[in-house]
Structures are given as C-alpha cells and as structure tokens.
Length: 466
Image (cartoon, rainbow, N blue to C red; front, side, top):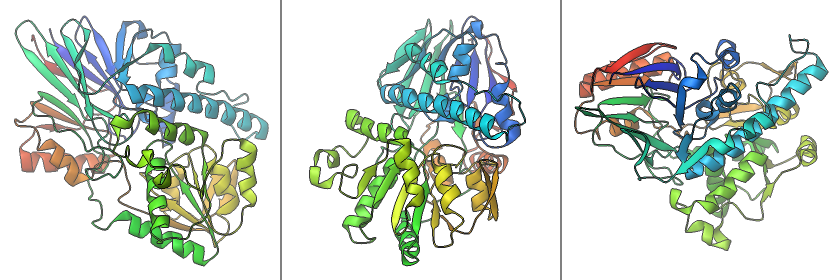
C-alpha cells in the first residue's frame, strides 16, 4: 500500500493541528484542532472540511487542548461518524473543554449581536454546546502504553508526553504486505523537570516523525520561574495592586496553583485570596484526583494539610455573578482566569476593569500566539480592544518565562536524540516560521536528520508499496 500525509493544519502555524494519513483503503486524522490567533487563520475554522468527511474513518488525538481537538464538533456536524481515539484523561478533558468552547462560542455570538460590533448582521457561533456534546459518544478512551488496533494492519500506542494531563506521544505502526513502518507524532512535548507531570517518553525507532516546534528557536531561562513569579507578585502587592493571571485552564492553571501554594507556605509571598475564576479550570483540577497515575502529585493530593488544590486561601468561582463581583475587588489578591491567550472567557472582563489602573499587574505565564490579545499585551500595545472598546493598558505587564508547558529547543533536541536511528524524514510542525526553521536547522546540523517544514494543505508521499 502507498501511504501519504496531507497537512490540514499545524503547518506554518502553532494552531489547528490536523494531519491526514491516507493508506488508500483507510484514512485517519491525527488531531483535529481549531485555528487560533490571526484573523486569516481563524477564518479557516469556518471553511468546509477539505476532504469528503464520509471517507474519513478515524481520528487519533494527542491531547485535549483546543488547537488539537477544537474542530471536532464541526467535523461531526459535517457527517463524521467514526471513532475518536485518545487517552482516558484526554477523553474527560475533551468533554470539559469542548462544552466550554461551545458555550463561549454561543455567548460571544450573542454578545456581538447585542452590542452590534460584529460585521455580520446576525453573528452565529462556530458551534454550539449541543454540537460539542454530539462528539462525546464517538470518544474511545485507551490507556497509556498499551497497543491497540484501529484497522487491519494499523496499530496505535500512547506514551506520556508531559505537557498537560493525559497528553500523549502517538506511535502508529503500519503492517503492510512486505514491510512494517512506524509513524511517531510528538503531539506537544512537556518540560523535562515539570513538578506536576512526567517527562516526555523517549521513543527508540521511527520511520517518520512529526515534531512540534513551538519553542524550537529558544531556550528556557536557567533561573527557577517561581523566583520571578514571587518577585512580580510582591512588586504588585507593594503597590497595593491586584494580580491577574490569564491562564490555560488545563495544565497551566494547576501548575500555578501548585507554585502559589508553595510560595505562600514558604513565606515567599503573602497569604492572600486566590480566586480561580474558570469553571473549566475547576472541573479540570478535579480530574487530577481521578487520574493519579497520570501525574506526580498523587502523594500531595492525599495529604489534607498539604493539598495545593484545597486550602484556605483558594476560592473557586463557579457562578458568573461571583465572577462579576471581582470587578469591584480592590487591594492585594490573585485572579487566575481563562483563556490563557486572553482570546475569550472570563479573563476578558477582569482585564477590561483592571488593566486601566497602574497599580495592578498582569502576569503572562504561557505561550501567546500571533494576533492574540496576550501577544499584543506582551508587545507593549497601549490600548487593547475588548468588547468593542479600546481599553487603555496602564497596568504593569509581566512575562514569566520557564512556565511554558512546551519543551524548549534543548529539550526538543533531547527527545529527538532518543531515537537510535535517523528517521527517513521528519516534519517540523506546530510552530511559527522562525521557530520551525531554527529547529529544522538544529536537527539537520547536529543529528543529520532530513527535515521538512510543511505548508498548509501540502501533501507528501511517505511510503510506496509497503
């Protein structure tokens, strides 16, 4: 059989990951993500899927971030009825994230309709909560480290990737008439010394590799990020200000709760109220109790007196009314709220009300894609458009590096060095042009790898007649 790949996303950009593998008689997709960031990227989410959906027979998910799963409701609505394979934790996270995304899509469309700031006369959501729920029956949860078959001659194994709860490296083994070939998809690789998650698994052999390049052009600072986090929090508190942390609900929020708890317990920052204002983040945090084997906090979460997710300073904000009351909060406190790139969600009204005041601080703790509000804040823009208004940015904007859930260049190279033989070809994906080029050059010069940076909708022949 001949094997080809077509890049329906995650190529030339950090979002929208979708890799279509065609075996002739069987086509499957690895990841099914939303495009985020620049307007021209987001508009792709509205396009019809670029192949007949009835020919697609399966989807495999590396992990449950929206740029890897967020297009699933659109795919199912267009007629996809096949299985969606993922790890057990990813299945539960996907339900939380997709529902929340559907709700946000509905709310933002309604808000734009009321305020009249959309160029569309009757703005519609990309998909609804009902569309999101329609995905759930097709999710097929599978354990880590156990090989399973998705078609005759096609086997899949999930290995720990770090990054977020349930995140996996996907190995696909193709058994042809004369040869066996292995495809390895890195998904998003986490940090090697993350205090919460296991490090990425080294894979010994692969014929074709897909490797993410989000931070392919940079190294994380050597300093411990919690030291810098304590500094910027104390600096803001010295002004009697409020700290706002836009944070990804999955992974980053739980890491922040862990670090803040330890900083308070060690006396590095004052014990002040921490408001976790994200129902999705709250639900996600609870999953850490259900999947003890998928992270490193199992001992901590069994100690009531050392529980980073349950202590007197931590307040879970579920109801919208409670969230709105925080608009009037003054003085020292910490609000953690999604979304992590400030593209939507409750964090927007916190920024709307608090960034005009110079005493407050906004702490950016994760990757910010091009075109997002988070990126514009980092780039020093003096006004940010929120709810159709240009809001002055007078609050201090801080950037804490080293808290990313993505491997830096050195860690990506470390993972690549785990292969005992050079792959036939390696696709550099899920990165902006500069970072993808830097990682490609590094892999080529140091390991002699044949690297390719694919473009959107580009296709390649992987094998002929295996």
